[in-house]
Image (tube, rainbow, N blue to C red; front, side):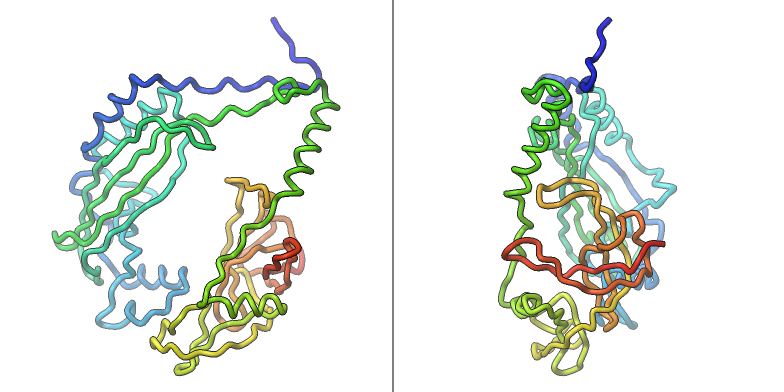
Length: 340
């Protein structure tokens, strides 16, 4: 029987991934169906299109009226099973996932998706789909850990005609081991651990910088305004529609003529998320990222400050201020007035 010394913590036992003999078994799932003859729970319909456009802040005229089409990026939305799920899955995907779990790859993260659009979807279109396990990668080592990338391809049809293809990729992985004791960090005792941690944090703080925004000819005027502590919104020179983020042309009438108006700085939290993972050196999770509806009617994404992350609420009034992130960078953020 052993006992941990005061100030130490027993390191968790990491899963032991299978050796390379596992890969042929995983690769055998390539080409196997993940869903066969799936049916969309609802036909393409105007209410769902409206909700999507409202959430995205997309006021494009193509999505309204008798000749409306669905936004192309809604392709996967028409195939989703909701809380009750689908009953037409083949079981192959679950078997592959169980095989990876059994080998120690018990964590999962979505990595990316790709979509190809072949024809527009219109209200009334009946959606069907088939899905196949397209590929399983050899074992890869990432910052998160070691595992396998699994790509699923879904072919989406409208009235039996191929309308688009959706590829979705995940990483099933065994989390990377992390030092859990002072000895693992090369120091002894609680004080040594605190000193090492403090030195590491000081070093990271000294070099950590917010990522630089991409400034180009389309948004340079916005960042010039930020440098002057002004939040500028584009206004169409023909139809006077306000737009944000900055675009080279009006999304309402297509005009390329525009000027700007300065935002009052008043707004409300339209929606928000709390970021926990992944951590970056320049950020201190958890923190709240809000979709802010400005008093002028446009929305923008920024940090919500002034209240704890778990006190942010939809509808909360906020006020613009400018955060000096470092000696070169200032960013617009929104401060809440107080806690609930």
